[in-house]
Each structure stands twice: as structure tokens, then as C-alpha cells.
Image 1 (spheres, helix red, strand yellow):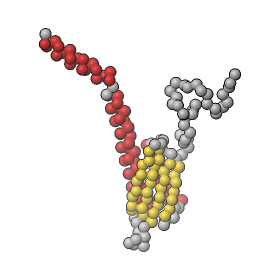
Image 2 (tube, one colour):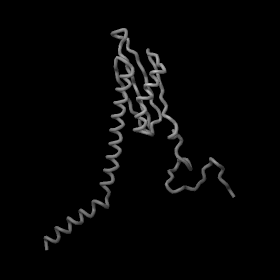
Image 3 (cartoon, rainbow, N blue to C red):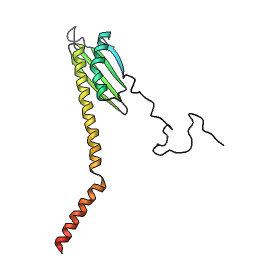
Length: 163
């Protein structure tokens, strides 16, 4: 008698399970209880606790919009040309499974640039959700069993008029 040891896959396939996928449980990744990861990089600009707190507060709404968000990479760049104070540039990449959204913005101060980046990412997420909904509704409307009766009804009307 052969017994399967915990963690070892049996040869039996379960209904709805794809070949090559783990035998049980959801795919390993971020739990809903864990907060998303914010990764900060400063280039020519210090990343202070105030900037971290501001970014976390302003980007929290993106996590509410897309709960599958695993991490957001933020890069703060201080441009010193043409003025010594220069503009502040922020680049962001929001990662969800199978998709990455990117945005960049410039402003005279970092909080304003973070606001602009958050708005751009929010717009991209809204557009992405709209495309997903449209494709789901489109496939439901084009199902073959819904379109056949209409074709049969038209065919039946034309044969009655010919008699």
C-alpha cells in the first residue's frame, strides 16, 4: 500500500485542478491580512519618514481599489538642473499578479508629485477594471445558446410568408 506523504502529490487528479498546480490551497502570495509593500528609492533626494508616511497615506486608496496589489515601487529623483532647487520627479510601479502599472510625475515638491502619480495609477486601475468587466459581459452576451433562437425565429417567419 502506497501512502502520499504531506506535500507530495498523488497521481490522482481532482476535478477543477490544473495539471502542474499545487494539490491544495490557494497559490502562495500575499494574504489579505498583510499590507502591500511600499519600496522607496531616493536618487539625489533623501527619503524621510515624513515622505514615507505621506506616500503610504496617499497610495492606500489604490490598495482599496485593487486588493490584489502586492507592492508599489516608488523612486524619488531630485533634478538639480537648471535651478539648484530643481523639480522633484516621482516614478511608481504598482504590481498585481500578471500586470504592472507604471506612472511618473514632476512637481516642485514631493507630496504634489506623489498626488499626481497616485491619480495616474488610479486612472489606469479604473480603465483596467472597465476592460475586465467589458470582456466578461461581452463573452456572456455572445454565448451560442442565446443567439440561435433569434436565428430560428427569423427563419420561421420567412417560411410562413412563402406559403
